[in-house]
Length: 431
Ligand code: UGA
Image (tube, rainbow, N blue to C red; front, side, top):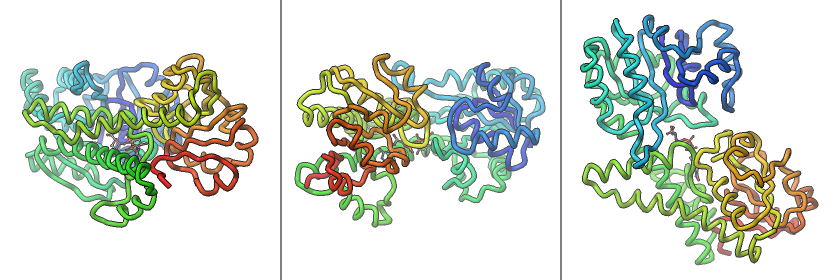
């Protein structure tokens, strides 16, 4: 099939390269000329494992091209995937301006039948709104709409593309459902066919439920600290019950990134706008915001204040495996401690360039994890990069002024560190 993918972010590129690998010819469109120029010469605009290699392969095979001009590629497309951002608008509701700009542009150029799939996370009623816009443009007969929400994670985008847990297809039209299904031939995953509204809502519900698990375990962790329990033991018991599942029960600084905060907030707001007070989500958001403050307070309390104190920060990205710092808890913690007068030396395997732009100039970036520790009175672990577990803590101890670790992600071995003479502060260890 000839495909057009609109939007070259994580979702757009994973789909473009993934479908190209499955044998389709893909034209990728983005309004960011700099990004298009970079991709055109085989350079990734962000860090994502496996993508540079697949990009090169697909470009060499001539199966993927990049352009800023939608009109030049839509004429030969059989299907289009819209993968643009839907960030929170000023009122917190999803801002659909990028989506509408893209689809209006499609409508303007359309003179043949096109399957148009919405991958962007959009509120219920968006497909209906798109249908009206295409009708108003006189192109309603040409376009077949499907709501095909995306569930891939940053850091594992390609793995999730090729092996998703499910493919959700929102459309009431049997032919559209069959077309989307056949486009996904080669992807072994259960298909769920439903109406547009259900598909739109299912995406928000999935993210909101995962966020709820995280806030739940963070509440349990707080309780553990108060009653002398160990959250890891509680996690093990919860996780062994298949009705609960072990995933997303990692306490710490709470969830960040470009999706959970935005989508939980949007669902909370959309529910309110439709007359339903979704109280649970209000609490999920509140607990999540509190986690960062709690961690900062823990550090300040243990050190007896941070003014003029040097602290090493490991991790800037919103989670391990990505260079993305959007809504990163690590950055919020660093900002709060810096505002209280701490001297911060930070390290991250991928996120330093993005973080340096977002943080005050006074925050120092170190070339390695160990270098960040030089002369610091404590080490703060703020992102769950697996490589942080591989660092030699004998070396870390020698570089620190005080062997003290605040593990905001519970990724280090507390017992081993204590044996090496470290004071270890995790999340949810009361004993
Ligand atoms: C999330 C969803 O997992 C994807 O299914 C979805 O497609 C995507 O949003 C999206 O809507 O586009 P992502 O934002 O890449 O993916 O990140 P996750 O791996 O879900 O992690 C989200 C946040 O939760 C991170 O800050 C992570 O550190 C935190 N987290 C995760 C915890 O605090 N505890 C956990 O146990 C798991």
